Image (spheres, rainbow, N blue to C red):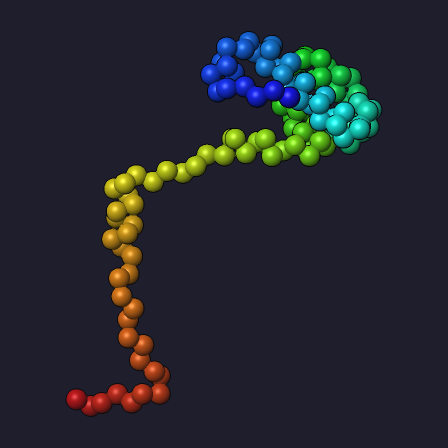
Length: 115
């Protein structure tokens, strides 16, 4: 598989992107020494769906996810993680609200004075 820069993905048509995904699936299927029939059985879909995907035809997202799961390639979905960003103002408020000192612990058996 070849690496693409971030900008070159935008230059590709949707059909070219689907074909690239199909090539990814085929590469990993062959690398794992699996036939289309075996992969389709592992993924719980028809063999023709695997063939369509590998030949750059459109398939449904659930089908693609089933294939990626069967190939053990779900880690590519890590790119979809959204990092929560906290604003500098909210961060400052949170830091200000944190305790600065520990309070004195009074033992339970200590007698209180009448003073």
